Image 1 (tube, rainbow, N blue to C red):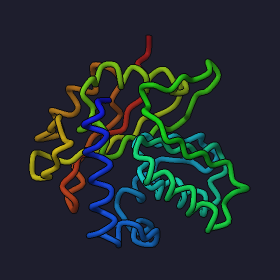
Image 2: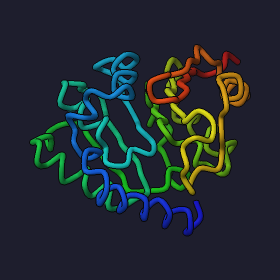
Image 3: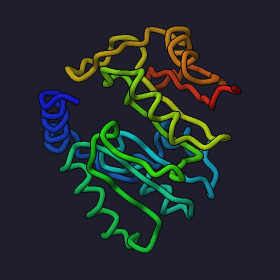
Amino acid sequence: MTSQLIKNHEDGFKKRQRIYPDLFDLENWRKSESYALIKKYCNKNDSIMEVGTLTGHHILLLAQEEYWGKLVGIDFVKDAIDWANEKKEELGLDNKNIIFNNSDFLKLCFHESDRYSKIILFDVIEHVSNLELFLNKVISILNKNGEVLILVPKGREYFDPCHINFYPDEDCLRNLLQLYFEVIETYEVEHNNKIFARCKLKNE
């Protein structure tokens, strides 16, 4: 992750704080389509990692709803992770099995036994310069029977200087993911103009 890209994300977070206060309202996220997708495919005993968690809203909501497996959110924007940790304390969730990690996912070292049953990549892979390295790292920490949940903007309608990969339709996303995973399903989330994919490890 280049220092300029990290700065772009940090600047984007500060802009959200100034202009879009609703984005920091957990109750808005509770009603979101992204959270509905997570709840649809995650079980309450799953060990869940969200890469690119930003303010950790999905993780915090899962903890509030008694998802009791390990819940981990990773993001390299320090202000966002600080907000998540402050919100965790404010909500009285310190006794839950929640970890927010201010790190670059690709630079993290994982123990051989550190595996997850669900890995969430929502609005993430459009930002990743080395998808091969990134997705192979995801594979390395996914349980044998685990799943990866992916959500990306459809096309180029989302103007964001941090977006470097674009997915005009389901086929484009599916063709990429099939290089690394067995793709269970893909479909368009029409209301917010995004594409969802659910994947698992390939059978060797």
